[in-house]
Amino acid sequence: MSRSLLIVGAGGHGRVVADAARLTGQWKKIAFIDDLYPGLCHSASWPVIGVVADLDNLDGAWSEVVVAIGNNATRL
Image 1 (tube, rainbow, N blue to C red):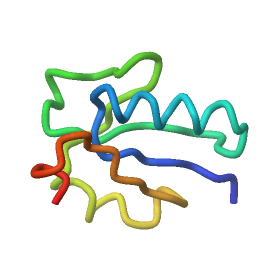
Image 2: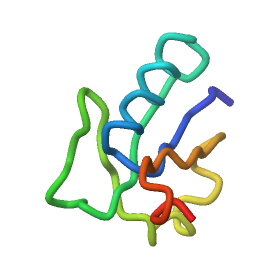
Image 3: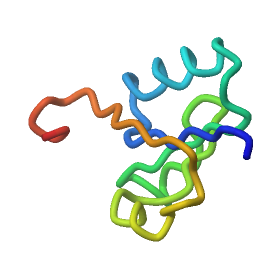
């Protein structure tokens, strides 16, 4: 299975995480989920594919998931 990374939070911190992940070359596919979806469909060059509540439905579709929400209270 090729590695895929789903990032929770498509804001500035999430984009930094995505860019760092891209630079490592370890993930074939990178995408975001963010509660601003569907109004927000892309963050930089990566797609936003759903909202945080969709995470349960995406189980098994992504090899790794990371929370990259910059706001401490929201992240908790």
